[in-house]
Length: 227
Image (tube, rainbow, N blue to C red; front, side, top):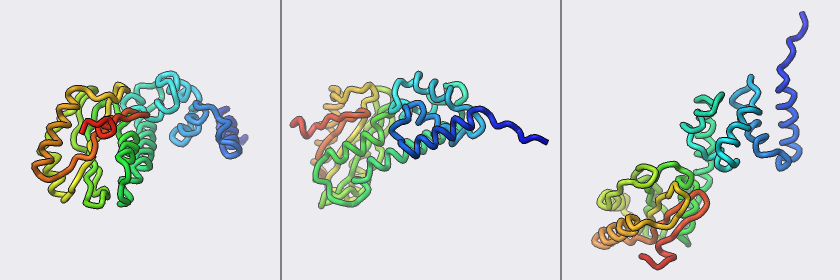
């Protein structure tokens, strides 16, 4: 019997892997996606899928941060690829959250902004998070407060304060995302911040900042003198 001929893409995939090892920067964006998808679809030509993903989302960053439920709308992409994307996004988020996990005192609220951008900056719906700090400005917990829609999320100051009291936090930093890409706070954001600050004052808890983030930028209430 003669050996069964391997599909044409096997040789192409191996060449891409060799190219990756030799000079990873030499691969185009869609070629990087090809290699990644090849880990999921070992018996499929992933070049057409990679190109479709790039066309659908426009850039490598937007493709990699795409919501899994949007990703599976592309022909040939199924639950296995969506799981791979979820894994990548979680790894990215945790790397960005390094300083909120290290128990090292924070020196700048921007360090929480970095974590918020990584965790929720690319989300398609609004999410509200809070970093709860101790007397030495060390993060006790970095937790989600609520999840909403593309332009709003319900937040209840009393629930935030209840968590702060439970954790024995003395201060906190608020953060939420704007899926539209503009970090400028809305009037609702301003009013909510005022309510939370007032509620916190009554419990001797300080709100150090409220950060509004996108996938690449943030707005700081503290930096703009609005706290």
